[in-house]
Length: 453
Length: 157
Image (cartoon, rainbow over all chains, first blue to last red; front, side):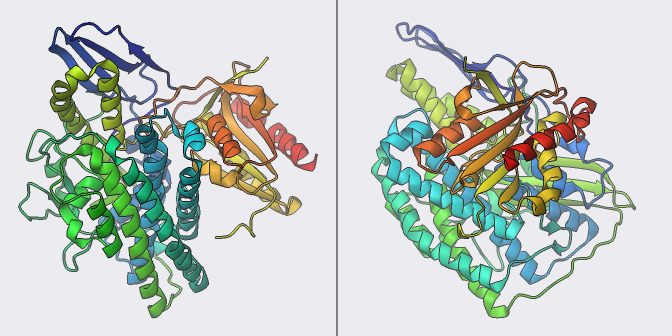
């Protein structure tokens, strides 16, 4: 599992640009906060060092859950991430249910998927608006972007708020859900609340189109870079769907075959490298990518109609291997989850909501669970003793599955842009890292202040 | 999903409860939640490590009280009350990831978007231990009643 820690100190060291030489060293002074370092040393046109380093401190979540009851695991692991806590909670709950042999009702299944969609929108819109858009507009962060493009920032903030309230309704709160338990949900929305949500989502579609128009107007800032890549994601057949929640594991190299989730170790093949404290992964090639672009490349034909239209406008088609286009794939998915949720609410309301009581009893077992986090496929695996206490846990997060691929992208990209100068190279490498929407450093946000005298 | 249910005042507890004293804001919110009846005009929100979500919690409020673990270079357990204008963040962001946020920057953004409460009060509490653990250090635990009292005084004021 990727690790994260606390207090961070970032230093950007820009060496003097020499003829045909680069010295880019964006790094952290200490290991105590989890972040990535970009290191590029080019001497007289020769690349001497080119690394994506991840010097994060371990977080020990797998050890932390050991000894805890199956009923408590979700609460603990939801704290792995402040952005995709619903995703971790769902993966965890599915894993516990797999280990204990629990089945859930169709209603629970639909409500969980609806909950999961809310987080996809939350996270994607944050990434597009707060992390990627400043690059396209040429400003350092979203804060100055308010002055530059205030109207669109307001739409992004509004859409993010809608996604948050959507999560509140289904998960009990925006972050770190409280309604998920093994076998079901502790609380379901009323039919009136679902109708209201549906209307809100219908009203959100024009806003998403506006965001798409604005992104399209600045899409010229997306670097034109391609590298043939293996893309790994969930794939659902019978019934087929653009999935974030059900299905098995596939890749663009799998020739249509789908592996059961229990085989995830054969996919991830985690290994360690000297330049990173986070584990790396590889499957058919020496690296693979996960995330929105991976899901798109494996499932694009199953997108909702408007989502397909958005993809088309951007020229995004299956087989795209420009990692910077991951942000556009996220935008397409925003439209997809909203449009699909509108239809799903209709299905729930047509059947009518029923009060259901989830029950479970402890037993020994082992299980694996998987969902698509906004930033890619996520695996959880637990083992329980006869009292239902956790004896072993293994978690493989999407960002770790992207590290090797980022390194391989660096190795192809830098020689192609080496003549563009140090600042341009640095900017494109940072943008590349951001395009993967990495999940780094959300374990704490602790204030670090000095008082104004 | 409207603002009608939104109360004028919000108390926001921030922190990661798996990192001992780092979760102090959330622990205080959990205690304060039992006083809901005493403060019917107040929303008490455990915002965890919610990052940008704080922006939405601040919206459409008259006053916000934010409680957070803060490295202020003072004695562990000490609580300091300050406004956003009285402090500058010395936290540096890499902007690689959505998972890093700076509370003071978020407040600044809320101001620019004209979504900021007129009054924001921050209670910073200096941690003793921010290592792994679900319990507060004894030092902070022993001061919990003092912290609650201060927040209640702020609400009464």
